[in-house]
Amino acid sequence: MSTTTPAPAGGAQAPPDGAAAARRRAAACADAAAGVGTTSALALGLMFAIEVPTDGPFVFGTTNDVLGAAFNVLVIPVYAELGAELPPGPTRRVLLPLTVGASVVGAASGALLVARVLPFGPSTALSTASIAVQATWMLVSNDRLLRRSDFPRRLGRLGRAIGAAQLLGGAVVGAGLALRRGSLGRRAAFVAGGVPGVAAWALWPAWFYLAARYLDRARPAAAPTDRERAGSAGQR
Image 1 (cartoon, rainbow, N blue to C red):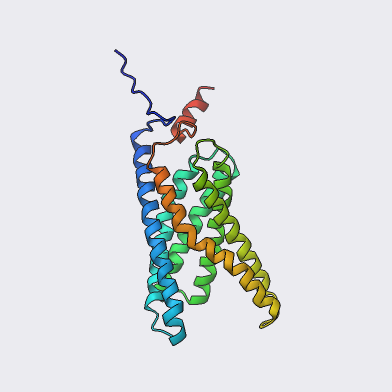
Image 2: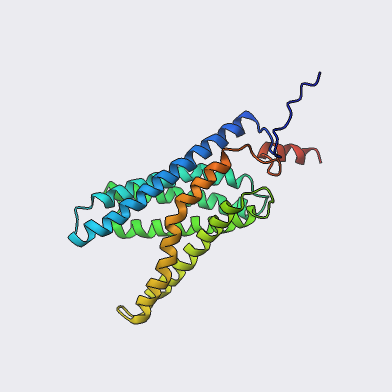
């Protein structure tokens, strides 16, 4: 009688217990990030609708900052798990650690702002830089993962579109800042860049929801674990 455990149906493989546990944690974090991100977006919208016109008190603004910090912590296991499915190369070797670091910076920036340790201006600059790095990751990593036939098309295309729109929108808004204050060109740049940028930002929770559904499944056979990569390399 064979003692070999058969592979699950559908082209997936049963990863080692540690890898399976990490994948389950990543799926749970992706679900939590989807919920926290949605609530944070609602809090930000209520802040602009209610608190900004009356100049406070910024309860919704503080809520958005706290949730934003939590969001940046929750996304780290998701990036790490999906990054493990990337082929060896700059995206995995350089961009993944950079994105994890940017998420840590984003979380710390929001927490320090709420604690009134970091002023609004520097906190905003750090958060903007963190978003830009994460948007780059969304664009590049999803594009790479879409080259695999077993990676969900909707998940990959949405992530790629979010990253591209976020970066393009930010670049256009940044160019507008160089124009004369109050000019028509500056206002046009803010609208042209702000609309796709805000739309992409609002869709991040949807991407994490889809990522959770993907991570609920076993790691595909086409995406071996780090341990298996090391083992196969040692056999060569």
